[in-house]
View 1 (cartoon, rainbow, N blue to C red):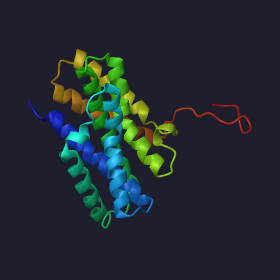
View 2: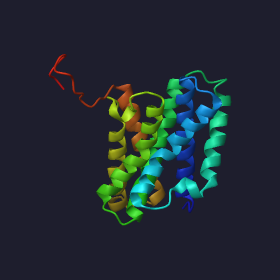
View 3: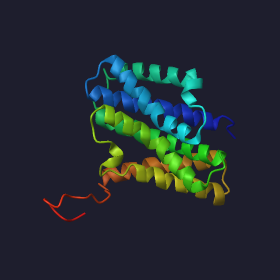
View 4: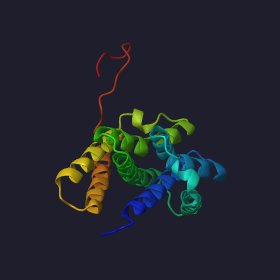
Length: 210
């Protein structure tokens, strides 16, 4: 139906995470160079780790389009900042879509390499989450994946749903991908709206509960 749908997902994922990284950097009052750097690592961090694990050429080192997209998205975001003041909501929206889009890419890379579907889900989670881990580490924040919010769990459930849809749904690949992306975004949205949390560990000096 859409022969370049996978390419479109990659483009949208790059833009989403570049905007997510840019907004996060501007929250910390970084200068324009810092904003671009954070946008870059947020966009390519997960894919870089994935490609190193697969022992294949790192995608952005042979693709000037990705670098150009990140640069111009970061510049646009800095301009957009002048009219958009609610960083937190905007950051959440783009980060959620980036997670969904890049999770799909990671799962597909694993399946295309003839790896077990479970490994495909792991690669999808890495692709979707590790850019955010690097971003938050550079911003001196506890990465979102290690906090109470549902984040990596959404990527895992999304990866599993995508594999099941491919195997049993009989729908086109484009529809399977779209459903999975929206599923991940919906999980993230509902988790934040209704405060869904994974149990936390507490120090014994405070409580022994989880």
